[in-house]
Length: 145
Image (tube, rainbow, N blue to C red; front, top):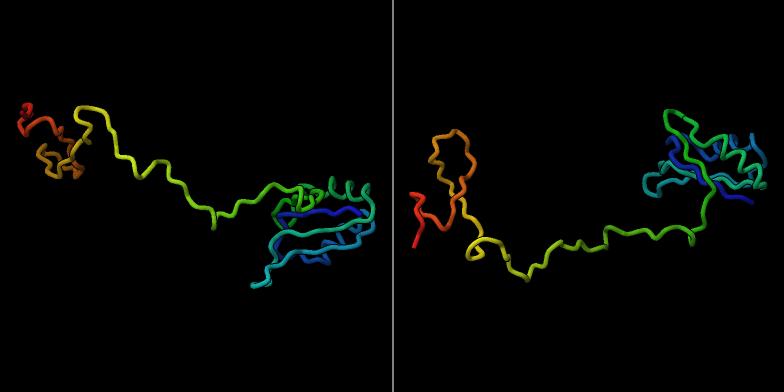
């Protein structure tokens, strides 16, 4: 027995449709479209179990990439749950910040201070963006003591 995974199914495809399609290539022992438990709508994928591995391979090659109702089918041999890559649950995984909150900012320049911005726009420009003001210079651009 060979288990086949079919993805990117049109939402209207039923288990009977899968059974009929794969039966053209050999004996199908099981065909199932996966449905959402709450909404009862197709999740867009399903499984087919064929008796002969050779017939399953022929079916996979014939149907892989076939466009059905505007969607290209992804057809491949289903891998057992134990052989799949580990799935990361994004809901329970905590986000790691790229910096340490307990360390203070050690900026470059004199005194390690950050530049200060002034909301006064004395340049006569019509733009409302803040002007850079060097903390080591006075308002008349002379060095502070």
